[in-house]
Every structure is written in C-alpha cells, then in structure tokens.
Image (tube, rainbow, N blue to C red):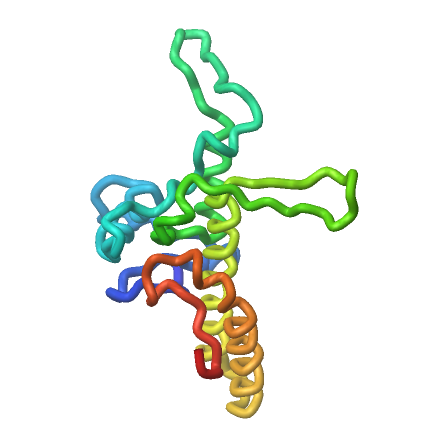
Length: 190
C-alpha cells in the first residue's frame, strides 16, 4: 500500500511513500494504469500543465550531460546505460517535468572564480534547472508532511514559517521558470 504525498494541480498523484518500507518514489500509475513507468506519468503531467511558451519541458536527461559514449550491445544495437541510469535516478529523487523560460534553453551555467588563473566550472542549464525543480518538489513534500502530521499547531506554524522562508530565499531562481505557478513563493511580498 502506498500513500500519496504530492499531487499536481489536478489532484493526480506525483509522489508516493511505501507503507511497507517507507521509501518514496514517483507515482507510476498502479496496476490499473495503461502503460507503465514514470516517463509516461511525466509526459501526462507535462501535457496537463501546458507550456505557456508552447515548448515542452527540458528532458529529464540530455546528451549534453553525457560523460561517456553510448555503449554498443553485442547484437549491434546501441544501449544507453548512462542516460538510462541518470533518468531513473532523477525520476526517483523527485524531478518532475517543468517548462523553463525560453531564454535558458541550450544555455550554460558558468561559475568563474574571482582569482585569476583558477579554472571555471560550467554545467548545462537543464542540469541546474532540474536541481532547482527537485529542491522545490522536496520543499512541497516537506510542507505536506508538516501539515499532515500530528504535531501541535504552534509547532506546525513554526515549521511552516521555516519552509516559507526557504521558498522566499529561492525566489531569485524564478527567472528560470516559464509559468508563474511553477515559481517559488515566499511569505513576503514579491
């Protein structure tokens, strides 16, 4: 038996917790769902959300993140173990499809040290974007756990204020999102 811990705007389950072992994972539709896998659920979620820019969300994984060439399987087909593992890990850690602002597509995040001669570090924007979305999803899950807990109301209010403070601290990253409903909202005035 699984308990739903995160739902989308339409009330459809996104994330569940196992009643047996306590593990959390993305909802896969259950036995009665047509098809299978979180990828189908992610596609359905992205279709219901609609893309304000007319574009689809970043893929959960992309070739830009590749660090090794695709593996060749003995039967002549090409297996993509690296991208498969990246996708599974990201789906299981709570990444959901979200549409980025158009200007960030194909972009690169660069961290340049202030000291001359030190090497800079760069990542594809979609990698950073996925981490921000995962953080947002985990904050939402934490918020739902707090609200559903048997804690005293004064403690719930205190914990909720910490979560709201975290949202407020992350509003700088709202420039990454195409849709307002995907953005961080703090307790203060935006």
